[in-house]
Length: 425
Image (cartoon, rainbow, N blue to C red; front, side):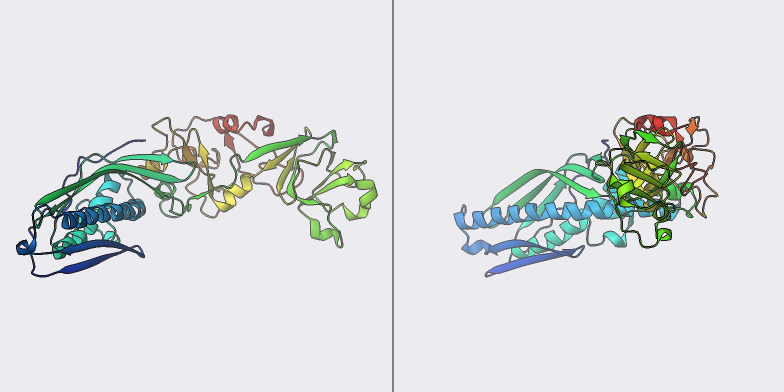
């Protein structure tokens, strides 16, 4: 996604400098966001002792220009990170979406202002504030300096990394009155900052500040993956956490679990030990007497301590819908709105790039703003005129054994995107 603010030229300005007698050595430290950044401005002399074209002084002035330019790269990183967080905060404070997020982020990043009002949070982190401190340091060292943002700033999202990248061209112009030389350094900066850890502005704006998510990335790419197909099985839909070959001292300690036996269950356990499990899945043997909910299947693909669903068709799935809801994590989506669109409260993505989605918790105490008859996909649930067909999901919405979430529904678009048609009725 590319967007921009109108061209910004000459952040700060040229200030005439009064030359001082003798030698001066200035080290200028900028403190921003807990990071010390140092610009080294080398000695300058008076007009009376300077020879036009003096190589030493020209080298010193050139080094100072490079030092400013290198320091600016770190300032861009800090400014972008701060401006993203501040843009989100402004939307939530006003309980109004941003009309042009990239323009607002640019104003905050460059000027340290929002709608022409100075922001305390950006006092030591904006590009303008940085230049004002550089300008003072260069004045003390006997130089004149200008800094220009002379092209539009373009923004691109990388939802796979939860980052926003800003690309801009800028220049440093340094004049050394001693040698009557000018130094110009132009560079294209590309800086990225994460929006992970921020509150989701769309969810907060939609639910009037009573239900929100902190944006974190899920540790998996798909909420459900079929692991294997059982050879024989009960006609049951079961969910639980796997426990592989445990030593069973008290069977009641294993309620809610699915016993995974990598060998022959008849050789490993007695029928009294396994009845409290939600289900048993064994590599070999006849599990019918060991639990009403059972299957014989290849267990090599079934890991220990994962969320597992056994369907009435004998399919065995690693399902993470509950984890998505409980941890409030986000997945990359071909259909979901981007972070910038969430700042605008866009309930439908306006472009072809990937976005992000989460699952809302319709069984939470704050379920009032949510539509219990609609999908659990966040942005679709908030649409007043959603025409999506929704389906119940095996192992979540209804079960023969396990914890049921009665209101859990998914729309056909995401059922198709995640290829989980076999988990629908």
